[in-house]
Length: 421
Ligand SMILES: *[C@@H]1O[C@H](CO)[C@@H](O)[C@H](O)[C@H]1NC(C)=O
Ligand SMILES: *[C@@H]1O[C@H](CO)[C@@H](O)[C@H](O)[C@H]1NC(C)=O
Ligand SMILES: *[C@@H]1O[C@H](CO)[C@@H](O)[C@H](O)[C@H]1NC(C)=O
Ligand SMILES: *[C@@H]1O[C@H](CO)[C@@H](O)[C@H](O)[C@H]1NC(C)=O
Image 1 (spheres, rainbow, N blue to C red):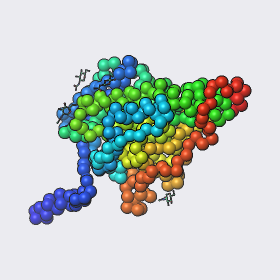
Image 2 (image 1 turned 90 degrees about the horizontal axis):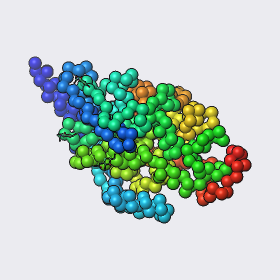
Image 3 (image 1 turned 90 degrees about the vertical axis):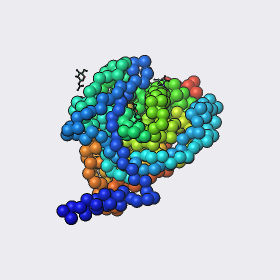
Image 4 (image 1 turned 60 degrees about the horizontal axis):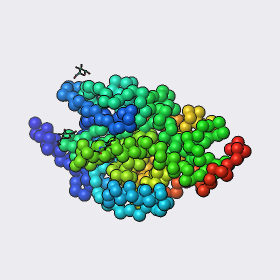
């Protein structure tokens, strides 16, 4: 009796101690699924409410619990200033001078393995419909019907919105590339492929002479017209503009909330681009390098981007930017994933050295990351008293170095050049 009383007193005390008293900012957050989001056939963002479950006996957890931590964000002083700086950069090639507001906000604790694991699960569900194999039950019996305008085979991206019970923090999860090159396929594959190739290849996804390129900026040899590239991106980047609409819609619904954006693969890259635009904390999992895309989209970017965190491992050729070359699995699937530099900071698991994984496109999948990477302790980190690898900024990252980007008007192309590559 006495012992249990003591333990009863001790446990809360210990957990209080454990949660770091004082200076640190331990914070547990519970997230519930609130909405599904999708893009209708008219490229409109649509939301559908998830119905909360009242079935408390459900065997699945009804919430995602993860840890928050203060992170320094930089957001543009105003969205109109951001847009103006971007336009100036596009039209007059002037580098964008922009004021950034610095702010400490609660973001996900990217040094907590459980937090990364929960976030990975939350992005995974963005791929699937409840009940599909691979769906991680979010708990409860969500009664799903599709949003108005939802068409199963319409192109576009979709995902979920989670929120804490008091709406103080809202998580926007964005689905990544459809499974086209990791087996399977899906309604959004075709559109995703186009966007992937525009954003993540050096020059219009020209892998060899047999490819139909996604833009027309190749000028023979290893020459690529920079202006042409940027024009194509700005004109065609429906994803970035849908992403910004989605964010605006969400802030309209949750005007007072702190918003986080998470995503896997292409969804992660988009999450990051939105994070730069709005200063929202981001966790992107196995994202291809999106730094080049941010540059081509002329997104003004603060010098430091601590609020964006990438999580990826070295056996994933998409995140590593090695999924290219005529015989790679990406090329065979019609992708040219050539970019490799990430914005913000990166938590990199060296699965090639430490788990002896071979570089293989199949390791890119989120289910693999959840089950074979984040679900268990990572020995090299545990050895040094950490839960996950230490994050670092990718300072010396180089990409597309064999290409020559410049002012090459189309008239300088001869058919011969094109056939020479
Ligand atoms: C929501 O997104 C749509 C585009 O899908 C946009 O036209 C509309 O202005 C947005 N609403 C708000 C409040 O931002
Ligand atoms: C779920 O929705 C269907 C109609 O779409 C309805 O028939 C069913 O009763 C609903 N189930 C619950 C548990 O609300
Ligand atoms: C949270 O936001 C939802 C809108 O999705 C609203 O219906 C609900 O009342 C809000 N709850 C609180 C506690 O503000
Ligand atoms: C993990 O790999 C690194 C090299 O990348 C090596 O220094 C370290 O010893 C390895 N640790 C374990 C536990 O295998």
